[in-house]
Length: 617
Image 1: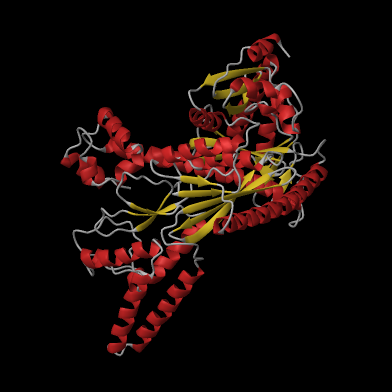
Image 2 (image 1 turned 180 degrees about the vertical axis):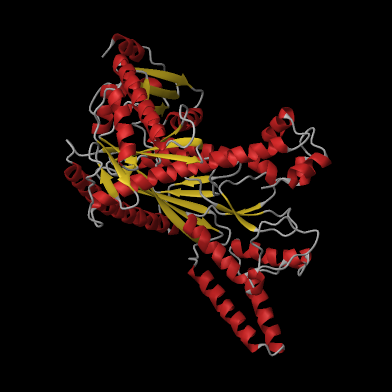
């Protein structure tokens, strides 16, 4: 133990706070403690789990941040983990923004739209969050089966009616664009949609029953039969929603299952007294952690601004000293009452057992799928090593692709596959700087030169600083390089690599006949079996590089086109352009804004707003 570490341990205070473990300047763990003196000292004395022992062996320094209370320490720990994402902390792997359904009640004819975030200040009505895109699609499909809401993005009401679209012809829309329904009639339908999404089907069943009886009175028996079938569908749909307790129950249920390696947290949503679904979250390399610690870490990472915190949260287990501060933290985030509890008996224990059973099932499926995936990818890498005569298994593959439009705004995409799977955090985009026009060969040479030069420089810097080379952004070099193209692209890329002083295996994949070209063999391509795992792997890398490059290039081109349109508007100079972008946050949003919204920006008159709208893409 170095003298600095010994001195810091000796001077530890009796105070709540956070401790930040470091290794060669890098933050590797963040924790909190009611008493920093006791907690931090314990790391450097006694026996530990293998994971803790490995972490402590790397620690050469630590910092402290003192707090007044344990609750302050919890909040600070949560923020530090989200900011630094230390290697040895239990990290929530699934960081998606869960979708909501949104109805903007300020619109004359509101639509049902998808929202990734809930803004409680915009006055809109939100439903969710829904666990994944599949759940959202199911809900939207059900709503459209029963309610003829519009789906278009027209700015209604229109100045002059237009011809209704196909949705009106098939009974899926009442055509407000054609003036065939009033705002009052449309709002009556919308109220039933809101009741339905809130879990109350009574209004919908009454509405459909009245419509069925009216159709029967008009002797429209076919239409009445269709409405009868819809009533049956609604009743069946609502019966499938498992009733839990009372209509007003709003709960999340949390449980965790572990194996020798990973942990799986199961989250089950109950809204309006019905189980709305659930989702499993993988906590990698956390299998040796205590369930209470895993769930405490999950709570502070999952219930962030993007997630709706319910009135009640039931947990499989929590330590006594974590329960109260976590409940206070949830109340502060929700800005309202929250009850966090570990149930001991009754129906609530049964709910936790259901969540635990689902967690165990999800963990078992993860084990099985991971084993299958590992076998498949390992076989593919071994096959590729054999086919290309590589010196070692290609654990890290880098793929490159050039995208441009008539030689304009050329970009190169670099994608990385590690252990046969995409490592998306390592993807990079290079804007071509030294090549003019559509010269893919020279562009490829430029990007290979820049990538490898940067990697070698970073490698030297990390070695000089005593830092692990493998953990740098560019210092970890590939085992093999894939070029999207034929023998000429490969030749230019290989020459650029040799000029950097490197000799990394390289090959090209020509899309026309899926032929593999090795350097120096332009007339002797390798043709793999169409069913080969090796071919599937290199196609995956090539297609991912193409997708990544095209996506970025389209965004770049669209942004450029929108900016050029803004420059065309008479009276919109640099100052007003800056004001518009500052207000709307993007050029696209400017062209999508209404005249009234544009006029809210300082210096934008009604005439200028009309000019902007006149140049909408």
